[in-house]
Amino acid sequence: MSLAGEDRKISIMTLLNEKGKVIARELALLFEVTTETIRRDLDELEKDNKLKKIYGGAVKFKVEIEPPLYERELINPEAKSKIGFLAAELIDDNDVIIVDEGSTALQIIHFLEGKHNVTILTNSIPALMLLIERKKRGSFDGKIILIGGEVNVKHLRVSGPIAEKIMEDFYVNKAFISVDGVSLEYGITSYDYEQAVLTRELIRCSETVIVVADESKIAKRTLSKIVDLHDVHIIVSDQAPPNGWIPKLKDSDVRWVHPVVL
Image 1: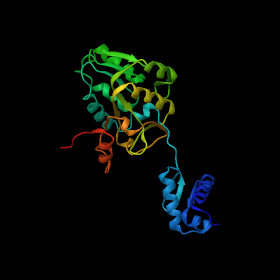
Image 2: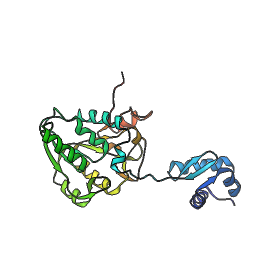
Image 3: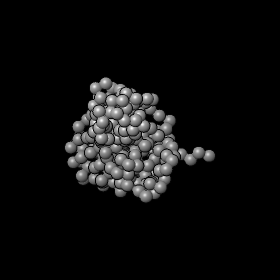
Image 4: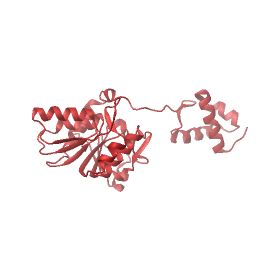
């Protein structure tokens, strides 16, 4: 059976979906091509996120899902705290800001002491509760505005058409955005389409867009596109940008903020 390249890749994916795993040597015999040709096919399919290469072949690509909030809070807590501190340094007195849902953006609230008359809009229920607690204690003296809408109980966040409509009436200085993936090619992405749509609205109404993302989100693409990289102004991370990223960040006019190692 000798097939052209694209037809061969379609057949490989059909076999992979049926069996869950394919072996390069067996594919070469089946399609009457060299193993080098099959490896090139597998390389291209992996680049398109259609499979995962393993030694001697490939397996089905595992689609990641967004963990519940309580699980996300346990992932890279030290890195997220560093990001929260650096992001809070970007907030000025009298700012009107958005603190997006997400375990990384939530950390910003822990470092607001000393900031005066800051108005915070949020669609995060944990952020709302933390802000109320700090306001009661006198460690936060600004205004709190909850972005209303449908509540996602698993992730303790608000999204949907009501939230999007509410944001049409606001303009803010800075939006601190949590994301699930940051990619040079694919921009910033989310696991959740509905959340991605709301995040685009948060970005639209913001003068400065600040993405907060730990190292696990960098050079990663997830399901739903939010915006292109050039629509972001600042990325705050716990690590320096990956090798080769700096020219593209400069071209996109994106500033990268990370801890300075002395």
